[in-house]
Image (tube, rainbow, N blue to C red; front, top):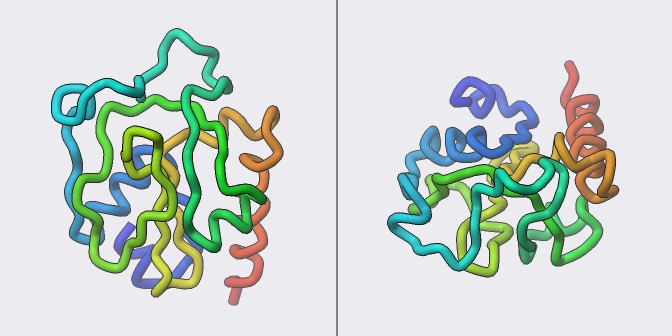
Length: 145
């Protein structure tokens, strides 16, 4: 992650990848959401099909809102850890109803977005999830030498 950031490459950090991005930038994690945060939303939803939404996310970042084409989205959820303190240079750009950080951006870099859910399991069913990958490919093509 640090090398991708150093080279200013486009990054789409998914679930644990978003957590790695945060730690690589000096942030910390909530080790167990249920234990330390409470359980108003179940962030680990084994009982649902993996492409089915488990909760909503309110988007507040300009880039992610433009990509997704809306300010509130439905997401699946398979994590027990989450961002606690944001890493240096990261902005929270989306939160769940229980205030867990669900999206981040690093505006000081070419194109760095982290999402806590799994859009790769949802993109066949939800166009806004597909938009994340289309945007990543576009940015990779723009960033080619």
